[in-house]
Image (cartoon, rainbow over the protein chains, first blue to last red):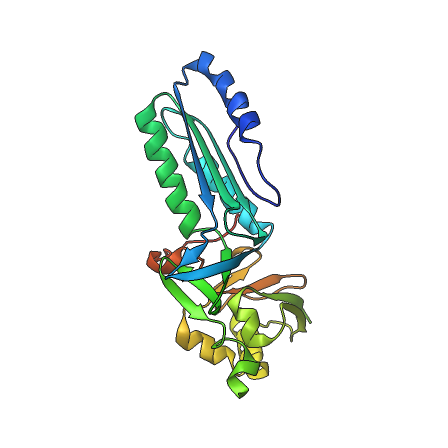
Length: 155
Length: 99
């Protein structure tokens, strides 16, 4: 069954793959796994931590909706798990697992699901770097927290 | 007198200094009335709106300014999502599935 939700800890991928492997008997021929990580360096600056803020229950509802909506021809199952909270470089942030009849469908569907997860659900990132804190509004678009916090403006 | 809870997400909370609060509004109050109340209480909210498009959700779906608020409504003010610099939500776009 397709599933999408926000999680706190890590996912046991072996368990998920094992579970989806059972669909081989129904014609499943490929599983693609995507894992997103916290990067340790952005714009040449060291990243100390990334805080993920979500808006529950709506973030999980939207991830679930993406998983269900992308279950079209040739796709056997989709799992989306997005972590929230404070994560350090090297920690996993996002898991997407797609089981499909063949590799082409599995890769294409995983890519499409990833793009939707990146752009649609209410998930917000605050990047703590050696040169300050930044809100991340998109690929490459950042706003320094020195500009958003009121006490900074009074200085 | 509808009592609604308001959530300020991510960078928006930096501008209001708090993450959530409740407002009691006159009968018949709309989403626009609530936003006007918030703008009056937090003048810096206008600064947010100059920086990025603010998204308003009511019970998890896109809110229209003319929507009437009812007791128990949950309203949220959100900045663009983290991967959203290239994302242009359609008019009927909603973040969640509603209640």
